[in-house]
Image (cartoon, rainbow, N blue to C red; front, side, top):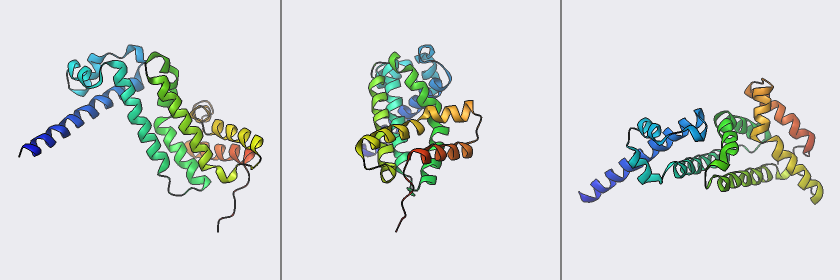
Length: 196
């Protein structure tokens, strides 16, 4: 009976933590970090400010926790692409940016305001470079100096900034963004190898 109460309490605490993180994420999506007040986040999550502070240590700790959670979700979503073919990869990437692109760019722009966030931004960028290297490994040239240059080009093409330029500035629909990215990548990568 006691372990049931403990697990119910732990589950309740977990749900409360998720509500707080969701409330902070929603506020961050709508407002500059400096204008977000813990009172508002707590009210949105239906908890007290003291609960937020006790759980996350304050506004910067809460923001770091949000970014850590979302980075883990981003990694999981990117790694789940079952078909490693170029079309499926680009469709998943554009879908990912449709959900997270604006938040990623906002986080990079405001990272210097939050202790601990610049390090997470570096981790996120390192993951993006590694993802590009792995996903397009069979289309990168063998010659190392050329390979390094082409990988840098791939990273730039697959960046959230490129998505924003195509989507917001260019006014392209998601399917058109996929096509534009494919055309840009085809210009710098080796042809798709034949599959057995």
